[in-house]
Length: 421
Image (cartoon, rainbow, N blue to C red; front, side, top):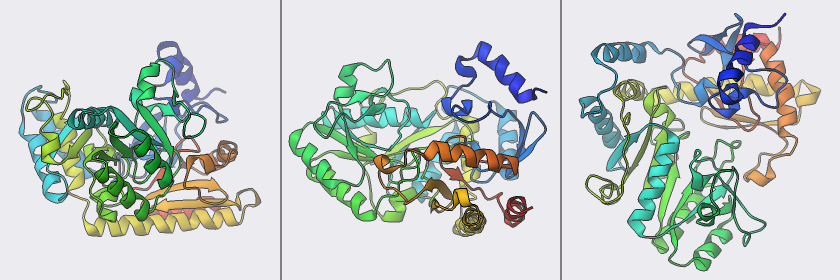
């Protein structure tokens, strides 16, 4: 008998390319069609087929409080009664901006956009306009959204010509993006010598978390700060995932490294569509209408996203992070014990950073090239087994898992009982 999710996916493929509005939702490479979600509450969601799952995707990160947090829901309901889009100045974006700038001491100003991708696009344009240079350095294994200049893969060796990793990106765009390996300072130093006075910025996820969890050292990130300052290039931290997740101020706060620009998303909108670029006032003031660098958006700083974001962020206290991180370690402890008792999963490592985690066979890698080629094959088996136990992971082996405040002691006990029924 065909499940309702299967029927819905079949119908969706008639009206939507591939049946989905973001590729990873298609379950491509897995042993099944995607699960359609009917509703969600706390740490769980219910599928259209009537099955309940403990959710470790959490909308790919924004829902740090869990689904339908009551305080956020109440604020959104009140905001909805006032109106949901104005295309004009309103106080809600001001309140969120003021709160963020007062709490994150290394940013002076912030501008809200609609997604992390749009935030990165704005930051790159801003870096180029501010420095008067064109080339951008990025790293293999870091994801910065589907901006043309960021969908670039490395050529053959350091001297190889970078090429687009998607059709539809002109060769000229690829030529202004330099792709390097993570955790290799000699490459960074060499490109700054090879392209003297041409590099506008270095952009990096200080915690690469969209192509596995490739943890980088404080020393490495500090060296990037020193090199960019030496060569009068900007350092951009993409904290769309790590911002407000590893700490309120993200990895920049944790490592006490101050980049020139930061991009935010996900948690900053409480689960509603949002992105932001933030940084020093002298750089941010180059954006229109004050400066000559153009950026605009009809739905930028949407009032619902602003209210949802502020209601979320106000709950992220030091005690909150202590509790969240404790619950994460309890849950990961159950996973680790389960892997140790299953012959086919004994070699699985669990890499974690606060409430983020990733499963990978063998030794934890620091570079994309070191990720085992067997990752997806192994993950697909694990995904299916966990699904049968009522545990839902993000449907791709390269995606990380997210724990929320709703994954409390009761949920941890349910996970334990589902692993050892």
